[in-house]
Image 1 (spheres, rainbow, N blue to C red):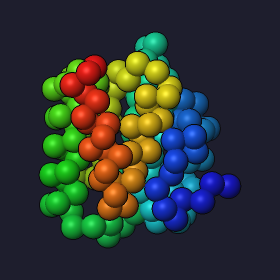
Image 2 (cartoon, rainbow, N blue to C red):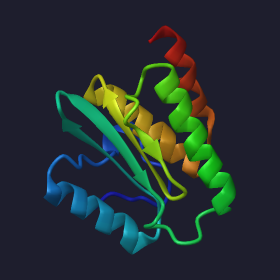
Image 3 (cartoon, helix red, strand yellow):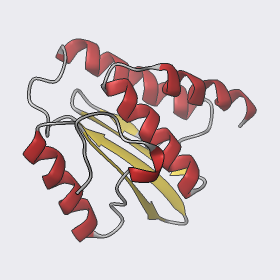
Image 4 (tube, rainbow, N blue to C red):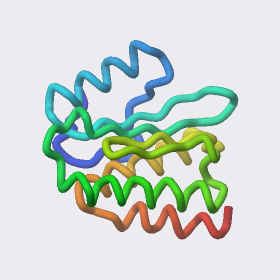
Length: 131
């Protein structure tokens, strides 16, 4: 099993493309009361999903919600994620990433940010200008 007591490196972000893979990763995060994150493939593109319902009491809810909405908006505005992407108080779904490496890198950066390290996500958002 993957240790999710801290942010996941890109290569260890679970693939939730299959229902079995998704459910396994979600259950694993929920059992450890940590943020869930995964990537999945569909419609020829990749999706990043993060969910805090697996981690009760994770951070101040208002601050987390603002962070997720801001992140989603920036990634959609720069064209990295599709406009169908969304953020709620407890999660974010980013559709339309061009490749598995791009999705894994973004998922890892988002997961790190949920653990308090925003540097990787800031770097990912800076790359938007070149997208």
